Length: 144
Image (tube, rainbow, N blue to C red; front, side):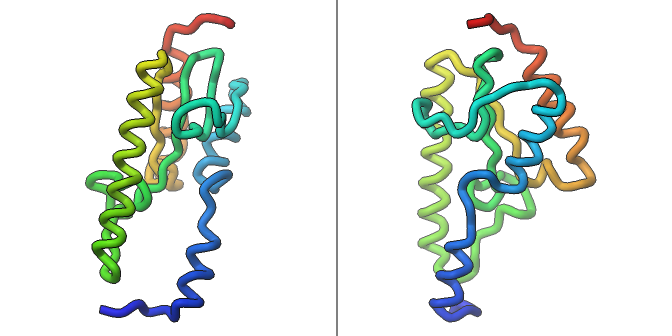
């Protein structure tokens, strides 16, 4: 099966996909900030450059796209019908990197939370964000 777009159109579409400051990430950040949490962004000193770093709680939050990080059982985590082998390999590497980076963070004493893109859809967004906030706040922490 061939691609429905020309190579130039496909290249342009793929170049528009952002890795930082995505809409789902901004939703999480706005909610946490509005509820008094202060954080750092994309800390390059930590494995995987977590999207949100809450030093006070020794917690990091990754906001993952369901497609790019293979959210198991999610309707948005589909394998494309074109160049299937390429996508399976690429997304598989993403998943392995996620697992490795999260293990490194946990070994360094960080609590790792993941929010999936589908959990921020309007119907479930408020509940997801409340649970995230509650989970962060409920964890024991030490002031630095």
